[in-house]
Image (cartoon, protein in one colour):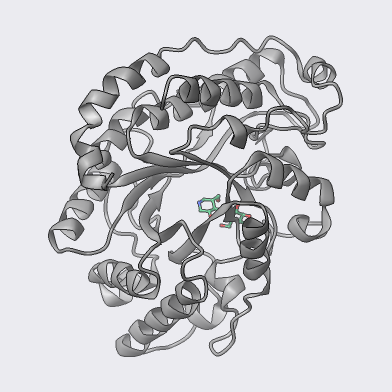
Length: 383
Ligand code: 9MR
């Protein structure tokens, strides 16, 4: 079915999917220790794995840890060194997103040099394990190499640099990428273009459309996305994306999707309005996706989450998954890491942590079981 005809039947589908949305939250009454015991030392070998129970029109993904991981880390690159990690990644997920390995500073470290090795390894791994890849990311304000961020260029040079980069990177993986986050985090909370984005600041917002056009030329099969955090609730940022999406579509720019990263904290309420946000973009004929889900919680140094915290966390995961399942063309659901062992959260939020669905040793938490049950119910109900 084409995207257009899927939109036409979305209203019909919504009535079925509402039932899924109303599934009771699976109770998660165990403490971290008790969960460890009930998981029976699975070390993540929970059965069946997530990818086996996921509805057929949805991809279940995880970020691939590594590649200049976080800031300074005292452990070796997880993807290349941690074999149990790789086993769980292969078994549980059918989509992978390089957490850092395709970002400018890693894949294009010098003006005349690309370092494709780590990204190549992920694309190869995905092929070997029947997974698709989400490419991340092409036009962003952050993690740009020094030569670019500190360099002096004319506008024409900058435009050529971006164009060549997109053709080089997207072209290299042509036909092997499911979705590209073409433009990442381009608006601030007030819905204004971020001026710290070098491309937008120097070349104007029109460069966003060009980035989409170039990416499409380089890989006509990849679905091209706008991606951001802080769009889990309606507001100025979501309005800005909706206005931009409408404009790009009116101008026949190859935009195919809108994604909510969904970096959440239990300090704030669960994103009950996410479904409505995604529906606004589905109504435009776009795919939607959850691309970076994690749910952090307050964890004073050295403490472990309480049973109650884990239950609340599981509910947040379910709220986000339910939103995606209830929207017809939400076709990708990705966790930003599946184990606390390599999560970015404690590095960036020192008083928070435990944000993923598995403990450091890959034993599942209540959130894992809730996600799996919710996926299985949706698949059984014909999603
Ligand atoms: O998880 C990524 C972490 O390893 C990096 O150090 C960090 C640097 O900004 O980026 C993290 O990933 C971000 C993603 O690329 C875009 N959305 C927000 C993510 C969390 O910061």
